[in-house]
Image 1 (cartoon, rainbow, N blue to C red):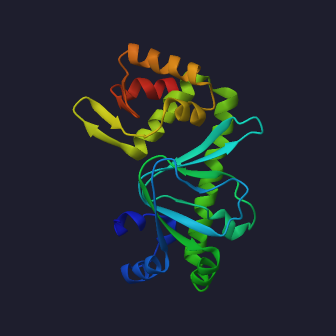
Image 2 (tube, rainbow, N blue to C red; image 1 turned 90 degrees about the vertical axis):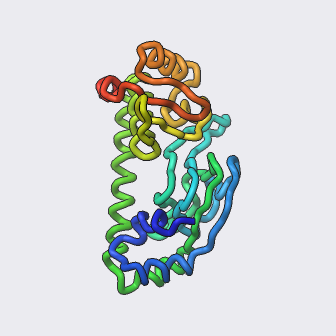
Length: 225
């Protein structure tokens, strides 16, 4: 696992190399395959996680079995920190969507670590604030933006975090099925597939297996507004 990637997480903000490595040594590593569940919605939250490799989806399920994806997280991103500030049941289920390595730090270890390090605590609070801001934006999108606009916005966000430049545009290996992409957008698979087919027909993108090649980012940006 690349420690430089892990150190991009807010948990390590402001730490020198020695302090960061000391903290990493206190963390326990876990390997997951696609489909492995790290914790379920309703489980007691008792630790924070940082992704070293792979991707994790955070989702919630309704009583009738429908699922909504709250976020797709990748290397250098952190989750589970809510348990530090508000101990209680997990608010989502965390599932690997690719081969994934995570590092875990118990809430007790984290609290002990934060004593005398107020800057790190402030950084964690800032990370929570950004997540709340994204949640508010997603709620607004569900009310004010149509499904094609939400699809375009989701693809651009995935490209920003997981895309890599290629000759034809930006290749985004998101590792999501069509159903998972629809859950992320908050719409039916049929409606999302129709939007993707329309974008492909216009030459804005090309669909790949659990990936998408974005060929006209500017048009997608205009459609996402």
